[in-house]
Length: 330
Image (tube, rainbow, N blue to C red; front, side):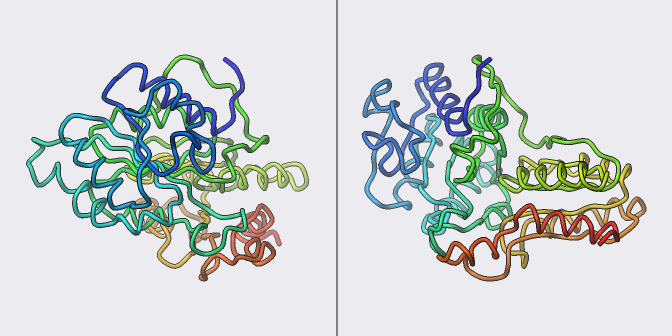
């Protein structure tokens, strides 16, 4: 094994699957010569050529339409939508076509499509390029939704997503791509991490913290600080795949701790953690010693100002405060 960044792990997963299966191809804006807006596909044109690394016009509708059609006919496309904000432009193709085709054809048609997209804020890219829209797509039956938080998971989950016969929305956080704090040992060989399985990133006995994507890293940061300064041991759960959701890993954790803090970057109103909170309340009420609490983004568009953006998006300090409040240790 060797150390890879999140970006490198994603690129390697695509390269290895493309070498293995000639039906896998990439399609999107500026992914060929330019290497993608964030550099994820740098060097792939030289290896695989223009027939498999396909630049498109600026039309998300066309990208997903072509990808969906080719998936139904036997290809395994990986469609890159430059910013997750732009999936809204292709929602008819995503929600009314790709998500429903297999069901409406009684399973006779498959849609092995991966839609890779960069989500989240923190880069000063303002309201139209910084949103966290995972709850929007997780609501739609027929779609699988994946949000890896580290390089090891990113590679294994992407391989599984490409192998899946259903459409998968694969959301990559911009602040993870080249994040030096979460570089990991990643196996050279190809491997899969099953979709629908969460992961305990840190074991603890005092409180459970369930998080997604970059908020997992922020939750781990808060957990380590509280451990060192106050002796509080947080169990940090990485949900990893929103749909299918591994609710059992969260229920098993609250059996130990009796408390759950849910953390997400998206605005709190209508956020995905509302679903997690509801399921835990319905299925694990007897194990809770306190109500489930959420720490999430403020209910406003993501500001352009970095100062305001940092206030809108949860950081380690707000997560720490949420943990202390839930433990009544403020």
